[in-house]
Image (cartoon, rainbow, N blue to C red; front, top):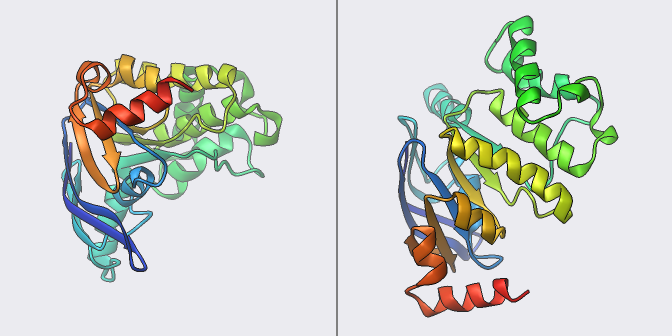
Length: 250
C-alpha cells in the first residue's frame, strides 16, 4: 500500500530526512515515535505532498511521485492530486473551516474535489459523524465544539474523501487527557476495521496496544523498527532505550 524509497528532504542547508525507506502493507498500522525535530512530521508531510522531497520516490495505492521538483505538467499535477486523495491527513491543529457547519466541513471536499453529488456527500457525512459519535453536532460550527470533538470531526472529514491511507500527525498533543481518550477511541476503531495508518504520536500506550509496527526516528533516519513488544520491552539501540526511559518517567 505504501512504498517509500530513499526519501531526502532539506530546509535550506539543513537536511531533515536522510534517505528514508519504508514499506507498509494494506491494513497495517504503523506508529512513529521519536524526539521533537527528528523528522517525523516532515516525513508525513512529504507523503501527503504538503512538502516536496528533494529526492526519492513515494508510492501510495499504486500512485507514484518522484521527489526533486514540484509537478509542472498537467499529468504530473494529476498524479499528485491522485496521491493526495489516497492519503487522508489529520493534524495537531484541527484546521476546520470556522465559517462552515460540521456537516459542511465534511461535504465540501467530496463535492468540490471529487464531484460527488450533494445528497450522496451529505448521506456519507452523516454516517461518518455517527461513526465518531457526533451525529448530533451536524449543524454546529467548530467554535461550538470542544477540542476533542473538533478533532473527531477532522478525522471524519478526512474519511469523507474515502482515502486508502490515513496519516495522523500528533492528533492528540493539543488535547487534555479526557479529550485525548475521545480521539484515541476513534483511532482504535479505525485500526480494528483494518485502515492502513501511519500515526506520529507521543501516546506510547496507543503505540503498544494498536500498532502492528513501531518506527523510532532519530535525526531524520529510522534508527529502529519492529513490533511494539520488541521496541518497548527489548529495544536494540541505546538511543531508543534512552528516549523510552525519558518518556515513560514523565
